[in-house]
Image 1 (cartoon, one colour):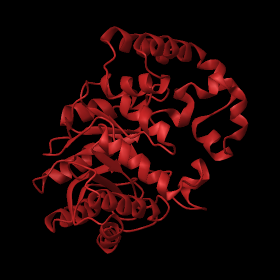
Image 2 (image 1 turned 60 degrees about the horizontal axis):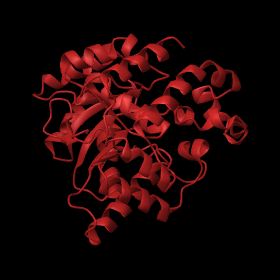
Image 3 (image 1 turned 90 degrees about the vertical axis):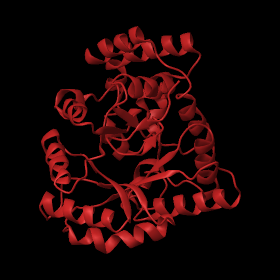
Image 4 (image 1 turned 30 degrees about the vertical axis):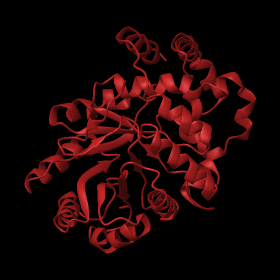
Length: 324
């Protein structure tokens, strides 16, 4: 069974899976272009089920629907509190969007984040990309200032290389803090963090890796292997993001067959096997944030916390996925 894990070297303890919320946005937003709109009541049910059945945190970002995802989360968590539906309030992780912006916007936009999320403090605040106009030092200084004002508790990054991650960690140490996390794309079909030094450096420094796109945008659920005709319904952008093609289905067939075998052995779904590999293959270093646009997907996600793949099955999945 997967118990909560320490986030980096901080005092926060998070469930191995958190709820990713890229898809909770409105038309013409980055989330909608991939996933489509999700109704407010559906979001409520998804968040409620996730938090009542093993997850204790939610990940979002300023750029997800330009604050719409954060607003959804704020409204739903407040409603759950009014209904006394949760034993404890969830931890909240969000991100500042740095593209074409300077570090000064970190302070200028934080109050919007707090207002939308309806919280006094964000538990984990992350620099979304290494794309700011300002130096990393300036960005870290601005983030530390938020921590000193108790507007954020811990600081993380996202999409940072190993070198950039290490630099951020060392800069934070100058202020008596450590880097809590680096959020990167990581799954059975995208194992770059193992090869580019990111995972190794994270383990050495005690930094948590948060894996986004843990199911390769549906490819690791078995859905497209079982129903290849459903590829025609996928948006062009989503296809490009994860190379969702007939050729990819053929190339990944050996992994699909092994996931299918394990799903039968464990009595779990293919997506649950894929998620369980991700949160167990690297010890306690990796957390993951699967999304859900339907209640069934939320149910599938939390069930992945209720078992552990054997070491031999993890190694077999390692070997097969490495050979693709």
